[in-house]
Structure formats: C-alpha cells, structure tokens
Image 1: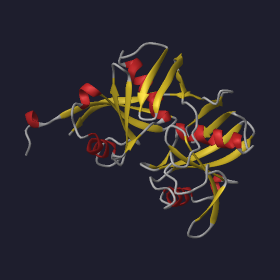
Image 2: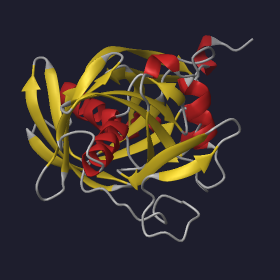
Image 3: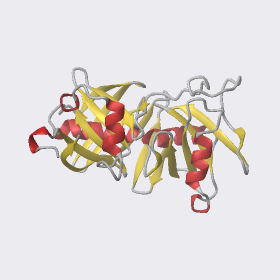
Amino acid sequence: MRSLWSLVMIAFTKYHGCGNDFIILSEKTAGDRDYPALAMQICHRTLGIGADGLIIVKTNPMEMVYYNSDGSRAPMCGNGIRCFAKFCFDEGLCLDEEYEVVTLAGIMGVKVVCRDPFLVEINMGKPDFDPERCGIKTEKETFLKQNISLENRQITVSSCFMGTIHTVVWLEDLEEEDLERLGKDLCEHPIFTEKTNVNMVQVIDEKTLKLMTYERGAGMTYACGTGACASVVIGALEGKCSRETDVRLPLGTLHINQRNDDEVMMTGPAVKVGQGCFEE
C-alpha cells in the first residue's frame, strides 16, 4: 500500500467552451512528464478526471500545447484556446485584452471581448484548401463537393485545414442520422491518411447553422470551435450560409465571421468548471 508521502499529486483546473471540456495545467505543474500518457490518464472519463483534451500553458511567449483525450497531439483547438485565455486571466498569467498565442497551427490572435461573462474573440487565421495539408490522397487541387463511398451509402463532403483537418458533410436533419457511426466512418476513411475531424451540419437559415462534430482524437463532442469555423467557411463557399453566421451547438452558440481578407474570427464563451488535485 502506498503511503501518503509517496503520492504524486498534480494540481489541475477544468474548463469548458460550449461543453467541449479540458484539463488545463501550467507548464510548471506539468513538468517534464510524458504529455500523451498524461492526457490519456487524466482525460479518461471513468479512470481519470474526464475531458476531451489536455492543455499545457506555456509563457514567454504564450503558447498552447494541446493533446486529445487519446494522447494524440493536435495543432489547434478553437474551444480550447478560449479556455486557455480564461485560465491565463484567472491565474494572472496574462491580463492583456489582446495578445498572441503560439500553436502548432500558427500564431492565433486573442481578444477578450467581455470579462463577465467571459467572452473571447479568436483570430483563427485563413482556411487552407490544399488537400495535401489535410492529408487527403487525391490529385485534385481542392477537395470540395467530393463523393465518398461508405459501406452503406455515398456521401458528398468538402475538406479544408482550419487550424486542423476538417471535413464537412451537409445533412437535412441531424436528429435522423446515426451521427457517431457516420462520423467514425468518415474519420477513418482511407482517403484521409491522418484521419479527419468530421462536421455534420444542418442549415437552419442563411445566418444559422446547427453542428455536431466527431473529433479524430476524441469521438463525438459537444462542441468544436475549429469545426464551426470550417463549416461556415465551406458553407459560405458553397452558398449555404453567410460569411458571418451563428453556429448552434448542443450547449451553446459560437459566432463566426470570415472577414473580407478571409481571416476567420470566432467569438464564444469560456467557463471554469472547477479545480483539484489528481493522483498520478
């Protein structure tokens, strides 16, 4: 039996953005641990604390290191970076209203719009339609409105890189689909050599979309910020919605605006759930 003195405790804080939840640790707290193994352990919803991903916060410069719950590294996470900003504000690591955050997907601009409730606008950068950037096996210059054969149906999809790899499929009614099965089948389709995040989208009107996302490292989630951005970008390109659109998620709404210079702005909430110590 391990003694109290032999226990290694990790102080953590948990946040969510529209239901997409994260365990956040400072680099000092995380130390030199094996981040992928830690992510799988602490994010497990039965054996750990439970979350969609693990965020490590670095300073000087501000940097977000993100791991999915399966231990895989992801370039970016839209809901995650808003929670990153809330954590930095709560912990006094950065009180600036505007600053930049380094990610694997590039430098993201953060702007605190409101402190109570906490709302953040993120400059997510420009979409990239190069199939090679998305790990797609094709000789086409873009991968838009392409038919993919699944086991029991043909489905039309469009893909882009928006902070990370995203594929969008338009559905008449999300309630009538087996979203988890469809998401998994598309995510693991061999044409996507690095798998893909799958956004299943229903058009409500020109200014409103309804979205459910199957993430390649976490499965079905309540929200996906980069997925909301990708859905609006592709929807506007295909004439399904405006370049400025609200995206409804099961536990909240994100406001997405693709400006005239093609930079994509995402505005949404970040909420602290609680904090505690995790026994490693």
